Length: 110
Ligand SMILES: [Zn+2]
Image 1 (cartoon, rainbow, N blue to C red):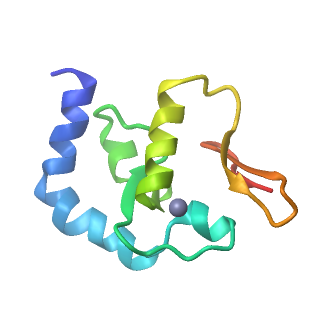
Image 2 (image 1 turned 135 degrees about the horizontal axis):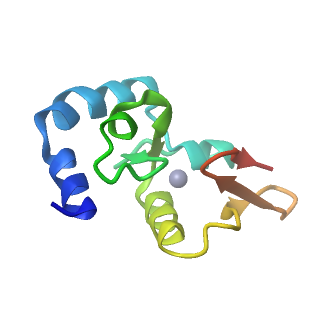
């Protein structure tokens, strides 16, 4: 099984759907990126794997590898993963107009 298929299979599993995902959302109900920008987004939030597990059972389940994102930020993060990850992802701009960035290792900066 390839890595993408393995990941999709895991996301359909009962363990993810009924245990890991709801447990994470109980601890972190709001989009992490929106919160860093001073916004509150709880609607339609999704649980993102910070580092794509590609079938790795530890990365699939580690609480510190999970973050809550809104659909907009999840899409931006997924697009970022497909591109040049040597630069940080710009998740938005602060009140002074400066970019707020995120990397898988450093988290939110700005
Ligand atoms: Zn968001």
